[in-house]
Image 1 (tube, rainbow over the protein chains, first blue to last red):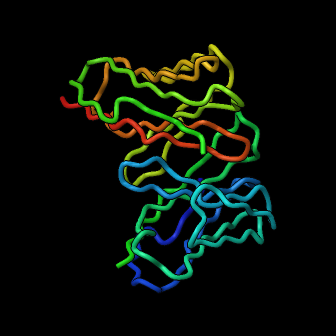
Image 2 (spheres, chains in turn yellow, cyan):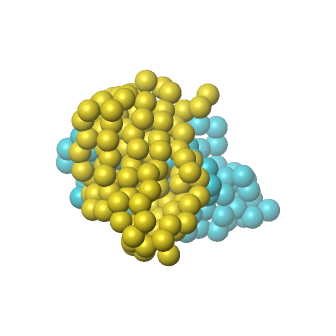
Length: 114
Length: 110
């Protein structure tokens, strides 16, 4: 049972570098999400997608981009890494937006920008 | 931005103690309330999804209640064990996504 898989698990970036966090799910879920977790803070929504080809901004989208070309994949791109983007990133998915549906999370990607 | 508050921020109990945490959330436009258990370096694990006022759910020694009219949910752990040590997150489901509280960090010592 793969569920939601994120890569890489750990990464150190230099300021100004770019990278993509990969996320894939094998549950045929329509909805996918990217959250970030900062110390002492709740998870904040970066971007979400309600289906292939559809994405929308969450609470903290600045400095990130996403795409959803397939149902399975929802990569998160950091174009010009900044120290403020040091965080733990979680990808998640759910079957649809029905309120009773569980949202499943990946194991997180630890990113440090130096 | 929907304000979800959790208390206490952290809790330290002895093995065998029972404990409870609080989650408060907006009482209008309610869709669902989610509880997660999260251990560092692991995926947040879904505990409960609660949708109806008065809902009570139970999973082993853990249970939760929901009051949508006043905007709060309680999570109870009966007879805490060291393996219950984790951060417990609640999240208010809005139209498309979850809005999380900061979590309650529980430490259970033998």
